[in-house]
Image (cartoon, rainbow, N blue to C red; front, side, top):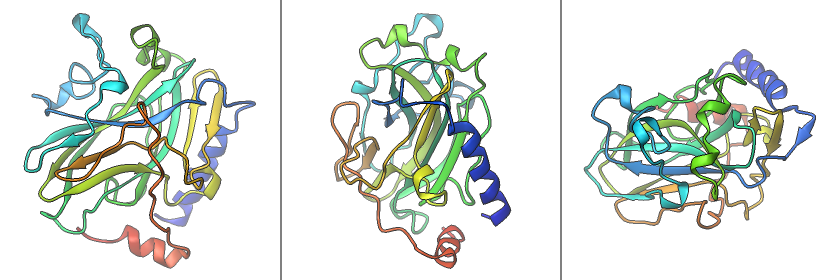
Length: 251
């Protein structure tokens, strides 16, 4: 990522998350993952195939019922969902992802990424490769609140689908949500609601349990809507040169 883009992202974060009222509405929010059978059509990914879709009388799937394990050699649509938002809908989210991805045919391959949020996204170079990050927005307030339907998931908070990865795993691997690897340390995991509330999460705390994981093949996934998922982020690079090397890695 070029330094100018990095600076622009940092500036955008200050605008999005420098809200006067903090924490209200997102104290219990988590970044959940849910794997399911692939949609028949791409156009269905963010609509009728979505786990929170309510069109045609469909019943949304609450995050407590999400699937966090998936067999090898079988494609899946893996949804990234922010769940447990108390009030106001969601207008912004900052996060990262990680998995093996050292070579095609080894571990997980991300075939495609579909953004379901209604606003903009500011993805780091190489997204959605391992150790990359994204900042996404929803169109507040017109569409933001409409996309989050608390009346259908009253006991588990408002759910909002960030997007969906089409995933295929050849060998055992674990896909995890993590902090954004390139932003300033205290801005790497953040949420803000349509009402202007926001939260910057202390991702350095090893007890932070908000990051979901899906295990492909052997291994254990984790659903933060059911239990804390301890932060297992690997040691981050400490110099800009090492960071650039990570982001220019070919798969």
